[in-house]
Length: 275
Image (cartoon, rainbow, N blue to C red; front, side, top):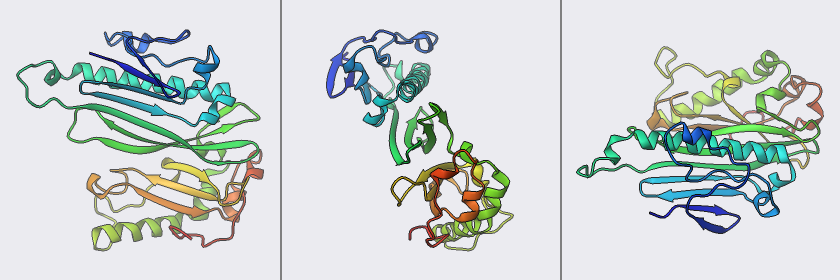
């Protein structure tokens, strides 16, 4: 059986562990360290922007922007996150009795795909979004979006919501229209009005969703993408909701003072999915 790791466009085969790798998470599952994430111990390792592990009934892919190489803490975040996600997939894969039974005709393929992208950037901050898909042996796979912001000056990794200084004021600035817009989108998919006492009839907590700061103005965050995953606002079959909202002055006022200069009220249609 051949194992593979893609690093900067080069295929390496066999059991791989570049200096500095942590394999405890895999060893704890009884799994040999098939691939450990490369740590920047050489220029070649520092240029790595993707990891791919493929073998029978097992696919793992993780990628991040090559610009992360300029920021050691950001690069370490991606490598550590990749190792954790791979370890979780390995653990589930090795617990599936169907894969160990030679008479079983159905052998599911375990899969994780994680792709990070730069959503927007200012002089001080990088907003990143990561789309993911997992299948770990259940009735169906799951997918979603993750967010974080890298503070270049402070060398900090923050969730997007951490930039909000007053969450109550921020929510109050857009909650009514946010919920109206969500209902409008749900009604389109359901073909009927949203009923508040239904299982998926209530609005969702904006701050608890995946928030991605975006931009149409170079150097400033002037848009907010809100990703609402399956089972949050509707059943799995209804899919995820992605609402794009221009940043308004009351929203900027609710941002923490140390980050406020990175934001701009863009004056567009405040509550259009696209404008």
